[in-house]
Length: 212
Image (cartoon, rainbow, N blue to C red; front, top):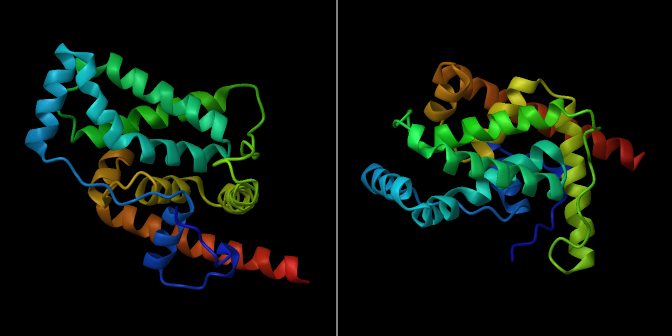
């Protein structure tokens, strides 16, 4: 399992490196895209036989979970929201009509589930579940890094945070995010760029404050 030894708060690097390090934090590998033909075949099969949905689940579960994790800061709630997302997708699969592509449709559901979550009369949790992978030391390190990013994201413009989260953890392209957010590709790229600049600035400032 990959382990980052450089504190994120010390990063002063190009956006591409920041994105790679953020993905490494949650052990997210770049996924192999399904061809449109294969994706359409799986969806068609899943409508008739829910067992066929497993392949779509395996293809997307890590990035949907990472999206919810970075937005809630809680592993338990991210797991719950991920389950809700895929259950809603399975139940609504017959209504899917090639709306852009499956990833855009799926993350539309994930965003709605997250919005419903925020409407609950409960405070936003920042704590990670303890012992994430059975190694307490790594779990604590993971929690501190997530809290650090989570605190920073909460101070940033919500549109920038959403675009960055979908790009880094959802692994959606600029064009896919543009359709999801009803914006131009140029506007999405600008949101992601600005978000990365904000995040790096916030993390460096936080580190400098801790050093004083």
